[in-house]
Image 1 (tube, helix red, strand yellow):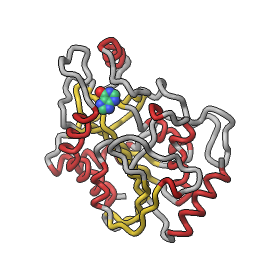
Image 2: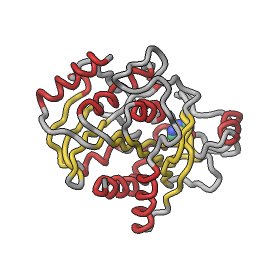
Image 3: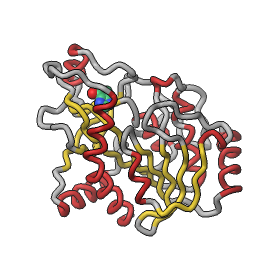
Length: 270
Ligand code: HPA
């Protein structure tokens, strides 16, 4: 594992010489944030040793290096999901590479269904906790002590300090930012009515198909995490309208400026 990470890092460093401080993972339909990056270098996943290659529509599959608010960042345009057939350790491989490139903070975004009855389409939700039990834990298998401990503490997967800061940023801008618990399901099917009832009953506020494994791998390595869900559909047992991926992408685009503002200001404050 460490050798594979080092080979990917060596390849990247042969083409890019600065050290990124902050990693960014952009969700479905939320790739426009890359427009905020003063780009210094782009590297396609397919060129990086051991990197998986992205297959889903709306994900372009490259690492983007540059500056946001005067800070060096590396952004993943395109991420990997359980429903594409990737193993958990493939899904988190880029997170491990970003850590070995130098990041100490990871910002993530995703499109999600709104489970909480107070949420509406177009809302953003600052993730304050996660439920990962429906997808494989990326730390299953022999622990790699160079990465982190066998039994990592998960009492604060998302930095309370960054959550508070993001709430302040949202308030100043008049953005009604919700907060809550994100649950990851494997997909690719959206949920049945019975599954929505289950998801609501276990204490989730939003449901999606990403993020939690990346956060586990980051926390394992001591990386500070912050994440936002964009609510692209209503995930209730009694909703009449079917969900489509196209609708998710459209609604993600509509809400994206709120997310962009918070990420930009948060990066400036780090
Ligand atoms: N369920 C699961 N994943 C999702 C949803 C949803 O309703 N919306 C966007 N991603």
